[in-house]
Image (cartoon, rainbow, N blue to C red):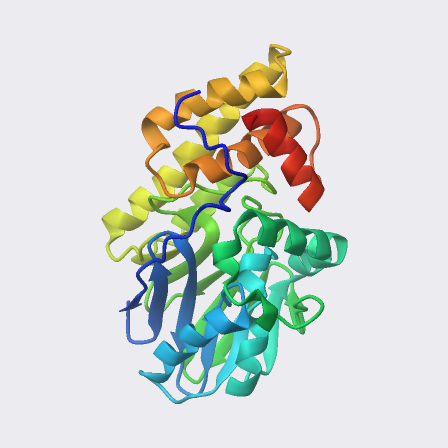
Length: 323
C-alpha cells in the first residue's frame, strides 16, 4: 500500500502549526491551527462561551490570551461538543477566568462515564503533540456540570445561543452551537474542512442525515472541528459536502467488503487506496484511516455502537493493519 505510515498513529507528527484567530461576526471568533483541533468563542453582552477547550490547560492558555486581546468579560461557559480528550482536558484552565458551567449533552456525559479513562490514555498515546505539557492536566476527567438533551438555549445578554443535538455522527453525543441572529454555526467534529474526519467512534449510517440537519439551519459561516473557519456560504456548503462524501464513500467501500466476507485487513487496504486518490492530501488522513475503517467494518458487521478504544487495542489494531 503506497504512502502508508509505519510509525504508530501520529507519534511522529511534531510540526508546530500556525494559529489563526478570526472574527466571524460581532460575537463569534474562531481559533484554528492548520488542521489541529479548533476552538470556538462566543462573546455575549455580559459573558463569554468557549466551545471545546484544547487538550491541556497549557494549550488553553493560548486561547485565553487571544480572548483577552478582544474582551475582559468573564468566560462563564465552556461547551464540550463531544467527549474526546483532545477537546476537553484543557477545561480546568477556564476556572480562573470565571467559568461557572461546563455544558455537554447527556449522551456525552454518559460516554465519559463509560469510556473516558480509556479514551484519555488512548488519545495521548496516539498523538502526543496535541497534548503539549500534558502534565498540566489535573488528575481525573473533565466532568460536565450541566447537561441537556436535544436543545438548550442560553442568553448572553441579548445574544441568543442555541446548543443543539441534531443527530449522531462523529459520536453519539455530538453537540453544535448556533447563533441564529448571525447565522454562525460551530459544528465540532461533525464537519471538517481539508482535514480527515476521525470516525473511530462514529455512526456512519446516521452521519449524512445529521449533516443535512446542520445544512437546514442555513449557516452563513461555520467553524469546523478541524480546518479553517468557513466564512462564505459557498465554503460552508463545501465543508458539509466534503465531510458527507468522505464518510459516505468510506462506509460504502467497507460495507461492500464486509458483505463479500473479506477480512478487515483486505477491506482496509482496498478502502485506503480508493479514498487516498481523492482525500489523501487531507490533514491526518493516514492517522485516521485505520480507526475509521475498523469502526466502519464493525458497524457494517452488526456492531451498532462503537467499541471502546484502549491504548492496547489501538496498538494491536495498528499492527494488524499497518505492519
